[in-house]
Structures are given as C-alpha cells and as structure tokens.
Image (tube, rainbow, N blue to C red; front, side, top):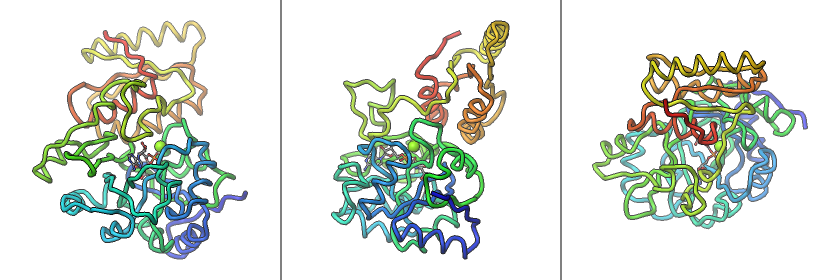
Amino acid sequence: MQTIYFTTSDDDLRKAGAIIAAGGLVAFPTETVYGLGADALSPSAAKDTYAAKGRPSDNPLIVHISVFEQIQAIAEEVPAVAKTLSDAFWPGPLTMVFKKKPIVPDETTGGLPTVAVRLPDSEATRKLIDYAGTPVSGPSANLSGHPSPTSWQHCSHDLDGKVDGIIMGDPCRGGIESTVLDLTGDALQVLRPGLITPAMITEATGLPCGYDPAILGRPEPSLRPKAPGMKYKHYAPKADMILYSGEPDKVRTTIDEEASRQRAQGKKVAVLLYGDEETSLVAREFFAKLREADDQNVDLILAAALPAGEQLAFSVMNRMLKAAGYRVVEV
Ligand code: TXA
Ligand code: MG
C-alpha cells in the first residue's frame, strides 16, 4: 500500500478524516506520542490496526474524542469526577477508563467490558476526529515492541507502506504515553504512569489516587496488571540497555569507565546522562534517543536511572526499566 503523507491543513485533515471514516488507518500527532488512528466503532478497523502494528489483539486500544460530551456515546456510568478531571487535564495526557457502551466493539477493547478514553491536546488531531465523524482509536503508531514514536518520521520508519496515511504534525512535547486512570473501581487508580501523576489527580479532585500494585515492580505473572499493555516487558531498542542507579557523580564515572571498557572491545556504545535536565525534558527525548541508537547500530546503551520516589521520574523510569529489560546496576 502507498502511504499518503498529510500536512495539518484543513483540506488535508478532511481527506485524512474521510480515510478513517471509510475504515482506513491514519497516524496522527498528540502531545504524548503519535497514535495510529482508526474508526473506534469498527471491528474490522481494529483488526487492521492490530495487524499493521503486529500487536496482540488482547491489548485494548485507547479511544480519542474531540469534545468531552462525546464520552456519553461510548461510556456507561460516567461519574462526576470525570468532568472534574476533564476540566483540570483535558485536552491533555490523561486517559480515563469507563464501563463501555455496547456500541464499542470488543475488538477495540481487547474483549474488556471497559473503554479507555482520551481527549488529546493537538488541534489538528481534534479536527481529524471531527472530520472522521467517529471516535478514533489510537494505539501508539509504532511496530509492536519498538519504542513509541514521538515524531511523524518515527511513524514513517515503522509503518510506511502498512498504513493509509501519516499526518506530518509537530514532534511530541510530552514524549511518554498518557497516564491511564481507572474510574470503574472504588478508588481512583493509575494503571499506567504518565505525565499526570497521582498527586496531581488528588490535587484536582480531592480524592485519594494510587497505582495499580501490579505496575510498581517488574511484570510478574502472579500480579496481573489491569492495563493489559503493562504486562509486556519491552519498549525495546535493538541494543542492550543497562541502567545505573546511585549517587550522580558515581553513576557518571561508572558509566564512563564501562563505556571505555566496552569500546575497547569494539562495541558501539551510547551513553544517556541527563545532568540537570528537567525530568519532563528527559521524558520528551527518551524514545527518540532509543531510536537514534538503533539507527546508528549501537550495541549497548548505558543510561543513568532517575531518582526513585518522585512521581514524574517514576513514570519515565517505568519506560526506562522496560527498555532495559529491568537490568539495573546499583553503584
Ligand atoms: O498517549 C497515549 O495514550 C497514546 C496516544 C496515541 O494517545 N496511545 C497509547 O496507546 O499509548 P497504546 O495502545 O500504545 O497503549 C494503551 C494502553 C495499554 O497499556 C492498554 O493496555 C491500556 O492503555 N488500555 C486501553 N484500554 C484499556 C482498558 N479498557 N482498561 C485498561 N487498560 C486499557
Ligand atoms: Mg504503545
């Protein structure tokens, strides 16, 4: 298939929306990562999405809407707190999980009785959803197992020839996928950590908010994460990756020494150190750095871990640990 590249002009977004309305697949920008858009109410579009990504079909898709009221069409029992959260964080990197209406097919939700909904902060993408005339499902627009795409070029690298269109929007400001928050339980619970932290959710709602215990450590078969996607170990680069945790100066020296040792043995090594960079900047660049390393055929990535304890750092570390296959050296 010949992939069409769209700009964010109204005309192009209308054409791209028509492709989605007709059952096709179009990659779209968001503030977190690029998504692979399809008609969220079409079982066959969901199947095509799984096929294009090479993704297991038990891993449900996030459904993107352009205005809050659209929730009513796809979700059952929308609690009042959803509006509070929408006012505080939408458009933005928060996904809320509700009981689904029957109109949302099992193919979209991976067989779950719930639906994950998000209102993204990209004007182009909200227009795309309007032109499609339907809620738009959007898993990250990468091949399954690859790092998530934070630019249209990343989408093109993974999906050119496999999808109908790619929108050439801005690079993503957030860089890690949205926070997934469960609203179906007795208490608010984060199923996937992201830029919106439990502390921010509590501040906005006055309600306690914790993490699904299954996401606090390495994926264990005995603890089943409520977000099925969290059971997968990797957002992996091709290179081996090792994280170094401890006092920053010591981490730096240890990584430098190990890099020299490996290079002396003929290995191509990439080093990820962040200095005084804000955690949000580390988040923005992390997946792109993994892809750069792959493009340069790096054998080994040596990376500094982020300080434990801080919630935003925990969200980024969640991706770092997966990319490193949970290999952490304490120095
Ligand atoms: O930032 C994002 O969320 C991006 C952009 C494109 O919006 N999308 C994204 O989608 O990361 P994806 O498919 O790569 O990840 C969706 C995550 C998976 O971990 C999945 O298991 C979880 O959300 N999820 C989806 N629907 C769910 C549901 N009904 N209940 C629990 N978890 C759900
Ligand atoms: Mg993904």
